[in-house]
Image (cartoon, rainbow, N blue to C red; front, top):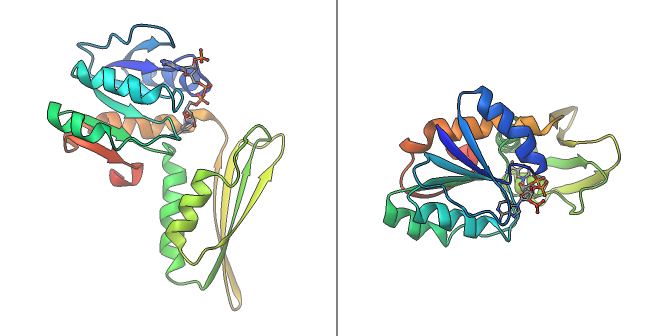
Amino acid sequence: MKLAFFGADGKVGRALVPVLERAGHTVRGLEIGEEPDVAGLDAAVDFTTPEAAPANARAALEQGVSCVIGTTGWDPQPLDALARERGLRVFVAPNFSIGAVLMMRFAEQAAQYFPRAEVIELHSETKKDAPSGTARATADLIGGDPVIHSVRLPGLVAHQEVIFGSEGQLLTIRHDTTGRESFADGVLLVLEKLDSLPPGLTVGLDRIL
Ligand code: NAP
């Protein structure tokens, strides 16, 4: 596919663009201040900031281009109407790592059979928010308001354990992100399925797994 990538020079962009190109896509990187000229492309990918992503997505939709967005911390709901009107797709996922999404799904399944669980999320010391969005989403899926422990240390990237306990047994479900390339598999999968999604907004990788 012919892609635009908003935020190609960011931390995620620098990891993802080479993987997308190796998979056969051509990528036009777009940075802040550049005219968002995406007309004629097949899709626009956005890993920027919560301030930039809504305008980038609107610009792409107005030029007839569907969007795949990983930027977190904003509400994509207002884009649904514009995308439907144009017969286009906006796919947004707070986590594009297939392993992390499966970890959450398995935790949701295990929660049906274990009375107690706690979540430990571990991230690099540069991550400012705690608990992580993934830990909060996992806790919502498990239900019962599980305790979340947040660890911030140098040497960590992004890791999460969900520990379930009952009389005489423990079950631990763990996912480790060791590099930002982990988000590429999810983006590639969404690009493959983009045209088969209904027009409008779709949120969450679990919707297509
Ligand atoms: P980052 O290193 O700060 O990169 C953001 C990039 O976007 C920078 O190159 C920035 O340029 C550029 N940018 C800002 N405004 C722009 C605009 N209007 N048009 C085009 N480019 C623009 O951040 P990151 O770590 O790559 O993360 C980016 C976003 O992805 C964050 O919201 C993060 O939470 C999210 N994220 C999501 C996932 C997921 O799986 N969904 C995974 C990781 C990260 P300047 O440096 O010049 O400002």
